[in-house]
Length: 453
Ligand code: ATP
Image (cartoon, rainbow, N blue to C red; front, side, top):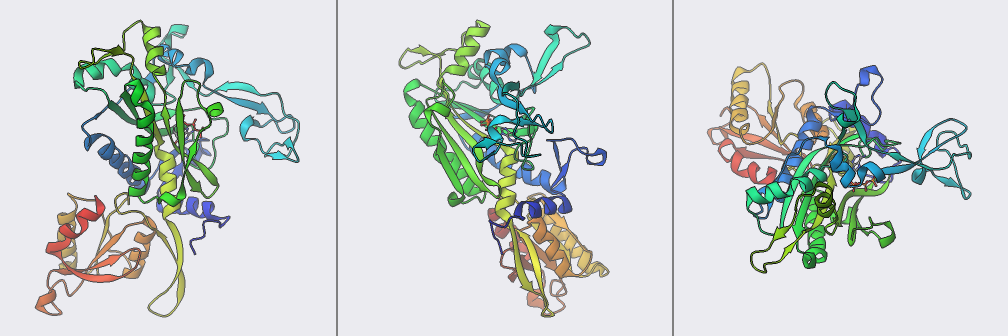
């Protein structure tokens, strides 16, 4: 039943996300704010698990990468030097018939002519550049000098703080600075749910190196990033690597790969891995008048470092995880009735809840007390959901829809009422196979922990 070509697949996923509390439209009760999304109780856990795993493998498990958390409000000079003030724009056209504003390179063509996707009108204005940055005012005065921007990417604060980090972290090249944080782009047409929004999060690494290391490191980081996606449950077969042709690359880039995923609405970019030469640091060095050079103790060479940048979108990856995990299957219940089971087959590492804990009956204090004991044992180590309401089958189904990989049921066997040998054992139910096994409470941590980390 998991048909990736199902035309309604995206709608089903969006509907599940709302129903279960993954994602809501921002400001929904006031009609919604276009291009902005709020993550609910399950969504926030999923997103956090993704970011934590990225931080773990990109920063904490490496000797050569340190972190940064830069400010969102950005000095206009930073974005002037980076080129964003002058050139960070998309081509915009207006439909003369329905007045819709459209991104020119996304307007579909029919019979060789561009056509408005809203009304089918063929009369479009000339394309003109529309700058995607959000501008705001700092402080109480409305003078030109008080302009600030919401950052359109996290990368620039890394470049601007390069020298401070180098001096304090005492790293030798090659080394990287990583950052996870919000970025803002006034997209002309936010669309495809959380794929293209106006407020989103990025996970970016700027990996500084000597010029002769750039091309090799570009390929190294591509492989690392592909491995990352596999380790969170996105198989290599669903990922496409696009070698961006020279004509489509930024003029300063010597090589760029786009890592794309087969979304239900088409193959689209998840992450860009780009060798940006020393363009960014050179721009900031020239504009600020401060040296951003690196002195190599061994070769005694002084140079502006080059950089390889893997830049991933948190929200796009969350969407890929949801699309990859969503499944529907027909199952037969104990009474022989068939029903549709909706299940999110998340990798346990990124699943919002790792374990559901269920006392078989809520009106038996001994069962509830034992379940609370299991909860207290697991909670310091993993996100656990406790549920004592309704039939056990229904509780399992709810956790299937939340993507919880394991269910633990505390029953009369646990209390030793069906034989001493079963005392302090529980039923462990596996989400994907729905198979159940008996496991000692004492073995729970050793069994579950390695699977969810
Ligand atoms: P696109 O061509 O899709 O607009 P881009 O090439 O401009 O994306 P980059 O500037 O390379 O994107 O940004 C790096 C990553 O940040 C992208 O791969 C994507 O995952 C994420 N990203 C960029 N813009 C958005 C957005 N509007 N909404 C959600 N994620 C975004």
